[in-house]
Image (tube, rainbow, N blue to C red; front, side, top):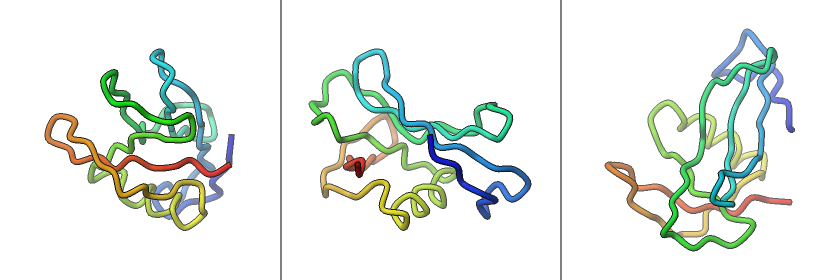
Length: 98
């Protein structure tokens, strides 16, 4: 778990980034507030898409754009230049940095 101290998106609390797995084994990224309550899910699971163990499908929605940019700037994720359509969303596949 990584703590995001007073991120500009959530300035009133310390938020935590949780790297977990979906039931299908793909990586999941969640943001929780300092009390452990969920704020947002940054990833999608997709049973048909083959991902390597260090990849994640990013939920590229309006509410997540600033958080995704923040994770990119921290070097926690990086784009692979691969994308997948999930519903109306064109979602980037990213590497999770060790």
